[in-house]
Structures are given as C-alpha cells and as structure tokens.
Amino acid sequence: MANRMSHVTVTALRTPDLEEILTPKERLLWSGRPGCGLKFFQAVGEERKLQVFVLVALVALWATLPLIDADPDARFGRFKALFMYCIATVALLSFSAYLATQRQFVLSNLIYYVTDTRVVICRLGRNWRLSTKLFVVSCEHSTAFPYEVLPTRPYPSLRVGTLLSEQQVQFLGFGLSHAGHPDRFARGVEPIFLDYLANSDQLLAMIRSCAEDRKVANNA
Image (tube, rainbow, N blue to C red; front, side):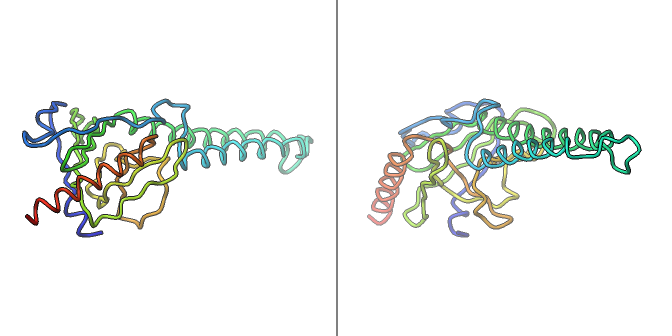
C-alpha cells in the first residue's frame, strides 16, 4: 500500500484547463462523472443505511409520545417530552442534511479521466483562502495495485488508489470521500474511488491493459 501511495500525487490548478492537466504525450481514453449521487435527495452507497437509520429513529421516537403521561404535574410529562423530542428531531435532521450536503458537494464537483498512463480525478473546490481551485489527484497505472470493483449501490465503484488522509483535498472537511463510501480502511488512510459507474468492469479492464503495456514498455 505504501508503494502504491508513492504513485499518487495531488496538485492544485487555478483554471480547469485540460491542457494543464494532461501531458502532451498522454492519450485520453475515457472521461466521465459519477453516475449517481449528484442531487441532494439521491442517497448512494453506505449513506442509504444512515438515512434509513435516521428515519427509523424519528418514527420510533415520536411513536413513544402517546405513551408518556399527559398530566402537566408529572415529573416528565408530555410537554417536557415534546420539547426534548423536538430538539432530538432537529439534531437528527441536521445530521441527515449534513450527510446529503457533503455527498452532493463532493460528487457534483468531480470529473474523471483515464489516460494510457494514469487515472486522473479532478475536483473543483476552494482552498483555505476561499479561492476556487481545481484539485487534481493523479494515480499512475500499476500492475501491482489491487484494483477492486466494489458493489456499491446503485452502481459499482472502482478503487484506483490510496491516499494518506493529510493528502486529502480538504475544505470544511470535504475531501474526496463522502458519506456514501464504505468504511473499510484504517484511520489515516483514504481509498480513491471512481464512484458509481455502470461501466466499472470495462474501465478496470482498460486500466489493467494499460498497466501491462507500460510494464512491457519499461522492461523493453
């Protein structure tokens, strides 16, 4: 994994110019965007489970209200319960909105490129000075990296690299990862995905073929 992370670079550009992103010798083979999750109410991946949990928690919470003593002199009567339930509802809805906002922000600002030498993930965002930047994450093709197609919903995702957490593109806590990603990595390490693509298997075959071609060319 450490060796693979040495083949990943993160840069920031002032303008989203494709000529600045790709080198003159690179051949662009494919470009695309996440196939789902770009809209606020379009929960994807693991986020769906969290949103269902919020919904079930809200229903269960309010279902207990009729069971609470309606006597105004009760130590914990219905009026106090209503106040506490409203606070809990606001907290749960805020959490739900945060998940959706984070996922929409990340996915709607992503574009993917596959060339004959690497996978390039571009994310438009702002740096800590609030100036707009194009953050470019470059993953060189490798025959040694364990590429993986994950059965995320509604479309599979392709893992193409690994980042240390401090390399993440960060603005208000929003990096490349989002609430829809599976939590399968250790703290301090982040997977790099091409999110929710119906043609993930074809892209994986393309990347592996390019990696083999590079290996043959380097050994020649």
